[in-house]
Amino acid sequence: MQDFIFNTAASIICGGGASLQLSQHCTRLGVQRPLLITDPMLMEIGLVPPVIAALADGGCTPVVFDQVREDPPEDTVLAAFQLAVDEEIDGVVAVGGGSSMDVAKVVAVLMGSQQSLAELYGVDQVKGARLPLILVPTTAGTGSEVTPVAVITTGETTKAGVSSAQLLPDIAVLDADLTLGLPPAVTAMTGIDAMVHAIEAYTSVHKKNPMSDNLARQSLTLLSQNVRRAVSDGSDAEARANMLLGAMLAGQAFANAPVAAVHALAYPLGGHFHIPHGLSNSLVLPAVLKFNMPEAESLYDELAPFVAGRSGAGALIDEMESIIVDTGLPATLAEANVPASALDMLADDAMLQQRLLVNNPREVKHADALAIYRAAYS
Image 1 (cartoon, rainbow, N blue to C red):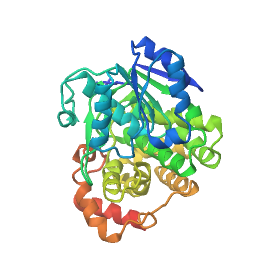
Image 2: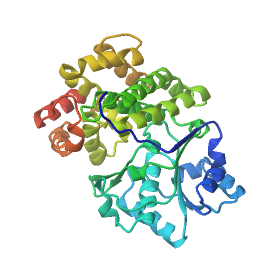
Image 3: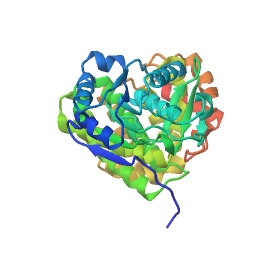
Image 4: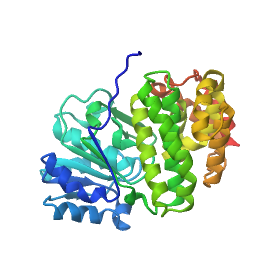
């Protein structure tokens, strides 16, 4: 048997309405005054206020930070951290998408250690403890509730990651009720993002292991069978629950068998053109899959039945392209308003993502990255 290490959240709670029981979990962790981190849109549409009220009704005194925005910059993290210090909070809860959960992870570590934010960036750079941490996703995509990574925007077009087992939460709460009515475009982007996590975990040349493989296969079954339903009917509770579970399983998979070239080529699109992460992945996915075929064909063939219901590596690629079209997402970089003149710059930036590219089943050189962007352009 091959050697491997598998880490995930200490406890996972899955059920409709589970987010309204957070006070019980806070009590179990010894948390009385949690910092609840979320974003203004979720507050405005009324998704998070009932969770806050339930925490208060359960005997907790939540302090709310609701200023997280997509691709959170350092100043957002530091503002949340300062509020946590000023209010003497004793735990951190995130209710939101990947951005809110990333901010919560970093704040929990900053509160529990003596390190600065800059000292946390990189792999296994977290030296201190963290405060108790509960993560509650409101989208079915990032899987951040079970990953040991947080990504923070550090400049106009740059991001940095904090990667440490300390970022895994004490409790991940999956409440599909929080995802009902999620807009179709967001549903599609986050759903394909989760599928990319599973595919890349299954084909990663580093740390691929039997547990991640099983999780990736189960994830792809759930996601492929439900993404169109969830996009077409935002109130389909069964589809929503399956999407949320599938995204979490994909998160567990890639947290232990890391992602590769799709993500490496997607990040520059987000950095330069502020394209949402899930859409960035979707835009380059078919071209990367085709590029990887000489080395990954057998693995894609293994995954095809779980996605397309039939064998053949080509079937996997065809089905992913069909899902992108059927869910109404832009299928090319041109459709996403990326100028052709930017492709060289994007290839330059993609080559800076060596921590991801080393996991790809086929080596990616600068000329390859440029060719992939060109293939994805039209």
